[in-house]
Length: 114
Image 1 (cartoon, rainbow, N blue to C red):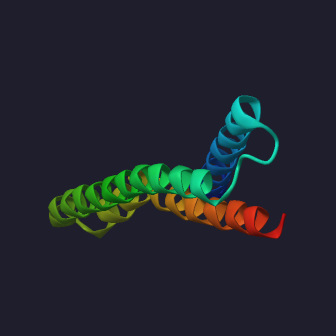
Image 2 (image 1 turned 180 degrees about the vertical axis):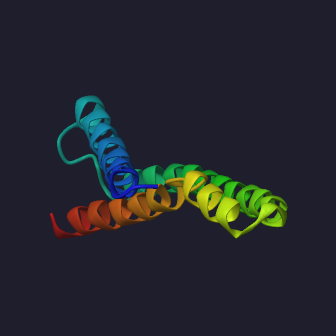
């Protein structure tokens, strides 16, 4: 897995969280007025997002376990094969998860500092 894949995972996670916060704020502004995105809507947004991030975390664990099982099976063929497959089977699941958590931190700082 290259650096581009990791960076794309981080950026995708951060941008996805920021976009969802922006859309939620826009929805509350259009429905109830400019000062409507208060603590309760923020917590509602955060709880929904936490469920989605928990699903991504579970998927990350499942993928890592499946990858480990695959590499354990391939290890019997020799170290060169294992090294090649190890590089080929890397995914960006973890970097996406970290990006989403970082995005929540950015939105939280924005929310409490405005």
